[in-house]
Length: 309
Image (cartoon, rainbow, N blue to C red; front, side, top):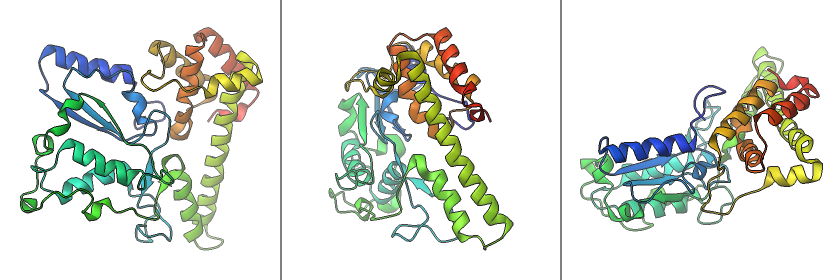
């Protein structure tokens, strides 16, 4: 997702662009790609070749949310009380703080990947974290980070010792599932506002509105699945997850048309609703095409007219 409710970057377009740049011999010799997003592994899973000089690492695998960090609350790692929002994404904070702390001449891509993976996974528990992934040309793993992002001369005497840096610490709190970050923002604005104030009323209105919009998106997708396949089979189709190594969809033009029809009939997916992208891809994988999707979406969202904003 990009800024704006209906702005998306699709995996096939990104990978095709990288392939064209490589084939043309222009733009890069080798390239390191950090990607922060929920289900970010789906951008490269089954798509990114290992022979075009691109090494990619993602905040999450192809089927899970990423996490915000330094989020408001009473936990260690929370920002100062005047901030009502998460200050960073866990994966991005992990690799940037790691890069800030080390002599990058002496740290390899693989070493950083392992440190970021451990921190982002909450020490391998995944209770408040996600699976950091690698894709593409893994032969680049042994190259130093300096080749791609330089290094801070102040760290020239810093030595790399696996697991020794404070950046590998596991913060016990201050983490929020990325899809819930907006709820946390409105909740803390509501909680901190004076009782009876206009600010408190507005925060409550936004919180209730956001929760209602989420419910409508969920129910609309569920109803579309039911209309196309029946309630029982529809749930199976929508919830299917392809084996690792396969892209989320085979026909990307179909996915784009299905998303377009959904948003025309039911309103924007929003950041939260993008979690249903796999379900919409599954409709294409099951043979649903644009006309059938349009008819089902029109019926589902006419039955739920408040879906439109």
